[in-house]
Each structure stands twice: as structure tokens, then as C-alpha cells.
Length: 435
Image (cartoon, rainbow, N blue to C red):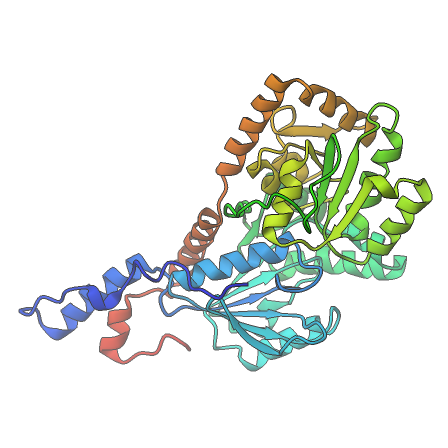
């Protein structure tokens, strides 16, 4: 990841003229108030608490979201600490994109160590963004009451607990995500990424706090390679999967398409891009079906090669059973590639059924919908129409808009609590911004 700070070049406080005839304190107020308007989070100290960070091996859309929001806040003048777990070989401290990274603990210990770290520094932060990946970080219990806590929830995890843990432990997770979190965060603004997730928070968890929807952004345009490892992307048609290789993504269903559609589409080739614990099980599944020659498991690919595979695909297919949004759907759409996905929360928001892709409804199989979609896309006129719709849809999202929306919500929360005053006033009176 290239270290850079966003938006600093356009906002240079040294370039603001000071009228010589004005007294000192009004001049300070004029200069610094203008600076605050340009960089509304100037001098605000923010902690982002997230399960993982984008450089880790199984990081996904939730990590990208939290990181991009952090980058935007740095560009708006904030000091941002990103607290996360630590993979073997990673340093405990790092500086990247202007963000202070603090890594601590494994996937379980992080939920003990991060709250403890925050408790010891409970008055150092103005804002805490508590990203609830099923289990929250209990920020309202460990920070000062004057600190603004924003809960960030991508989707409800109740079914995911049962997919990964024994039944008794899954029940504990559901109890924490539901009754405990509902009460703990009842006075904290909650941000989620789709209307589906907002509805599920209300209906399935009985969420009490106000909820705002701030969608994911779309990745910037990256160069597209012409080959992968010196080899052309094989297959006609090409079906791609992009994402983490974890159980609830059900990537094996995408691999199985080669066997299920073999008679209708004998040249069909599935390309899987991503890494995770399901890699070897997918290798064995392809071997068991006798389709290893028509399934390519690429693992992690750099952006140009990833886009070469994705851009060559007729369809992007995801078989996930629950998502908050579907960042890879928009990533594919930006390249003009429609998606077939199940009609589940999050994916029904990122896929516009019949326009930028197709949703598998109750009573339908993934193979049937993929077959129908590929036949529809075999018409060059229809395919061009869908590709253009995909690109227009992806263009509606950007990380700049996501970051600006989050910045606006944070600024409004600080003002509601009476925490925002012009920096010049603090300089003139000698007051410190940190309690």
C-alpha cells in the first residue's frame, strides 16, 4: 500500500492572508475558522477500531471501507489511529497513508486488548469509530462520556456465527450482537452500508440507535494487464469470482458451475481470484469433479492482473449467503461486468436485478440463472447495454463520497455535543482540545 495523505495539497493554512490592520485575536479567528471550514476535522483525534486491516491475508470489503474512511479523515485534518489485530510477522506499530496503525492480539485477543488500550487512553480521543464485525469493541464502556462513539455495522452476523462456531458459542455471539449491543450503543449513531442492512438491524436485532446509510465507494481506475503470468485469460465464456475464500462465500458453488453447465457451455472456464482458508478445499473440489483443466485458482493477484481476469469475464458470480453490500460487485461493474448473486441482504442492494446483473430467487438454482444470464449476454446489443448500465452504476459510488458523508456525520455529532469550536478560539484562550 502506497503511503500518502489525501487532500492536503489543496488546503495550505500558510497560504491564507492575514489583514495587517486587524487585531491579533480576530485575525487568528478569521484564519483558523476558514481553515476549519476547509478541513472540518482539523485537530480532531479519531480512533478506528476494526477486526482487521487491508494488508492482512483475509481482509475484505469491511477493512477497505474502514481504511478508506480513515484516509479521508486524515485529509480533513484529523489524527487517526487504526486499532486492529496482528498477523504473524507484522509490526505492532506502523504508519501508512498518514494513519497510525496499532496491531495487537489475534482474532480473539483483539477484543480484550483493544478495549484495554482504549481504557488506558480514555480521554485522548474525540471520536471513536467502533466497527462491529459481529462482536463490538464496547467503546461506550471504556472511553470518556464526552467522546463521540459511532458504531459501524456492515451486516447482521447471526447466521454467520452458526456457520463458524459451535452452537453454544454461536448463541453467545448472537446474544452479544443482539441484546447487549442494542442497549450498549442505543445512544450512539450507527452507520451501515445498505438499506437491507438497516432493515435487518431494526427487524432482527431491534436496534434502538439512529441509523444512517453510507454506501461503499468504488475502487479507482487501475491499469488492466493483457495477461496473467504471461498467459492469456482462457475460456469462452469466462466466469469470474473475486473475493475472500471463506466458508460463507460458498465459492465451491461457483466452481461447480463448470460441471453443471458443461453440456450447454463446454468451453466455460471459471477463474477464482482471492485467498483464504478455503483454497485447498476448492482445489480438492475441482479435482473431485474432474474439472481442474477448466478452473483456475489464481490466489491473490495484483490490481492489473486482477482486472485482466475480471475484465475478460462475461459474468462475475458470487454465491455468498450474506453480505453488507458487495464491494466486488461494484468493482466488476466498473469494468462493465455484470454479476449473478443470490437475492440476499446487501447483494440485492449492489446488484440491480435485470439491469446490472441477476439475482437468484427462491426456487431457482445458481446454475439456471447463470445459464440464462449468459444466453442473454450472447446477444452483442444486449451485452453492450448491460455493460454500459454497469459502468454508470459503478460511477455513482466513490470513496471520496463515502468519506465526505462520514465526515459530515462526525462533524454533526461533535457539534451536537458542543465539542466543535473554531481552533483560533482555542489558540487565543490557551484551551486544549483534548480533555
